[in-house]
Length: 130
Image (tube, rainbow, N blue to C red):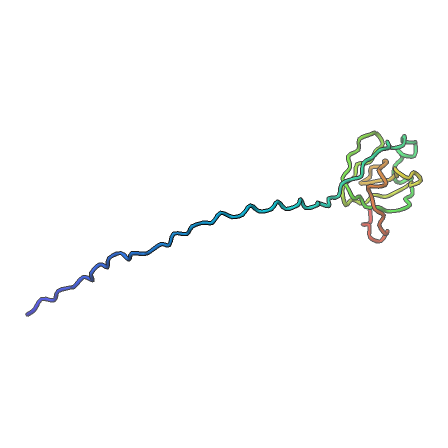
């Protein structure tokens, strides 16, 4: 009888892989792009102080009748007494807009003056019922 010999496969020599040397060409300096004009909603500057709150200004909204509905375009903090703090997108009920710059209205049950330039008038139908 003949003994079977197992022939192990011959290990192949590692392939001599030729890695091409990539010479990075210096990139030309990119021209500085002009700054894009960011059209952000920036609240207009306020030059006038709100009118002095009258007795009506501190009355509860129930005693006042609204004349129009507006939506706030900006956030505005109440800096002075009698001012109304606005939140962007909030609906503000207007009671008195006889003053060109400062309207008198109510937001979230708070009554006060707010800059007329900070709000846009909206149709009554689009405002949520209080």
